[in-house]
Image (cartoon, rainbow, N blue to C red):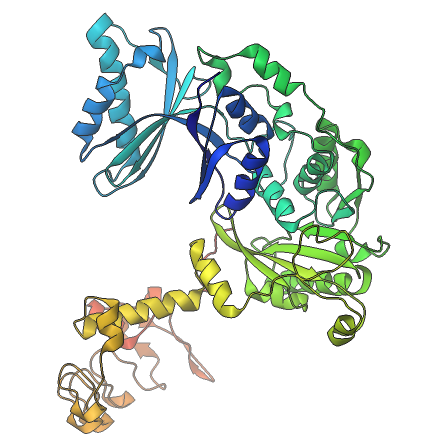
Amino acid sequence: MEKSFQMVAKTYQGLEDVLRDELIALGAENVEMGRRMVTFEGDNEMMYKANLCCRTALRILKPIVKFTANDPDELYDAVRDYDWESLLGLDSTFAIDSTVNSNEFPHSKYVTYRVKDGIVDYFNDKYGRRPSIRLTGADLMLNVHILDNRVTISLDSSGEPLSHRGYREEQTEAPISEVLAAGIIMKTGWRGDCDFIDPMCGSGTFLIEAALIAANINPGIYRKSFAFEKWPDFDRDLFESIYNDDSEERTFAYKIYGGDIDPEAVAIARRNIHSAHVDDMIEIKCQSVTEWTDNAPEGVLVTNPPYGERLRPDDILTLYRNIGSTLKKYFKGWHAWVLGNKDEHFTAIGLKPSMKLPVLNGSLECSLREYVLFDGSYNDFRADGGSVGREENVHKEGPKKVRRISDDEWKKETRKFGSDRKHDRKHDRRQERERKEWGFSGNDDFKEKEFKSRSDRKDGGFKPRGDRKDGGFKPRGDRKDSGFKPRSDRKDGGFKPRKSDERRDYGVVRSVSDKGPSLPRESEYRFSDNKMRSRKGWKRNDSVASEED
């Protein structure tokens, strides 16, 4: 019997639970979730299946050596001592990818260089020759992960990320990752037991991933190769038997519909759908979101609308209002899931979500929200036995009970995935600033501090206005420490009376209109020092700066 070994499946933040369930269903053992990863055990057959069948995995890594290193020299020595002949030949090629989270190793590229030096010096010392580095298509791909002083070197069995399915021939701007799309669909609970719609499909990623899930088609069958196919112990017969096994595929009894207002996007989606050979399950047309008026009595809608980077604010809000009105009028009995990244966009939808899930879409902190749609008022809906909630097979019998998430639970779950709301981050910064002012080092001391009244604070506290000697504000007439003076008396670079048409202190000459002189831009000021700039509080207006597209 083949010996089992430990493996690591990498994924996106927020999809760890979905990947865990996938690996358990494939027969993996000792499955445990981590941050952006799931560890498990199995043999070569399990490794082949994980690469071929997992919809939410980015890479499958096989750790080969673990050690501790406190500096780059110790890292080099440990790498040089490993028996690399068991994995590489003199004529082989290899590549290294490094992920570093350590104060001792601040630069991941330097880690890559030191690991490379250790490998090539191992061969140079023995044979006077060395394997070559190859950035793409290498015979052996190594992954180096460093956390503090703990180093793990693994073999990357996948090669290209598993999100590169192989069916996508073309793409629109900013397409969603195939792995993220599949993970979102699986989080909705949809498994092909009703109709599925994406009314803003772009290049068709949601549609194709939904078809693969509905028919239980392995997502890896479109790839040309995996990195493990170049390993010395690769079992081709075993892999071919797994690859050609379609006994778990099933017939899809419903329909997947997609659409987009952009004809070019529809054409790209059709080509990708044809490349994936799922044409018979998907129907796609060119139309706007407001034209989805004839739908089945129930189903699941999943969509990723534009985030507004390329649209005017009024246009993007109008789009989200149209989404909300269309869902309310024409999708009664459906579960709609919308992925977005701004609260004001969700507010424009005008519907109350039954579920909020934090999701990272690339570097953007997004939210996946579910809307359970029903006739009439919510009270009438509840009186008839309906509810909004999450259960097994949530969509088989129409809207059901979904777990309600309170504001506290939402904050807690959002922090878990590293995407705190802005006001939470501001609260933390404010608390840290106050802690420093009072000289506390820990949270407990800060919370237990008994503050005195304003008049009794001697350790940096506020005093009444009239008694402030430590830089506090004084009445306007008594300000001698760079306070503002009347307009006509300002000699320190302040503005002169409006009737003057020359501002010599700033080196700017402006014409005077009937309404008085217009204010010069910040770039036109001629400040002699930064003190005056900060005291005056002049800053460049954000609207003047050009936004990145």
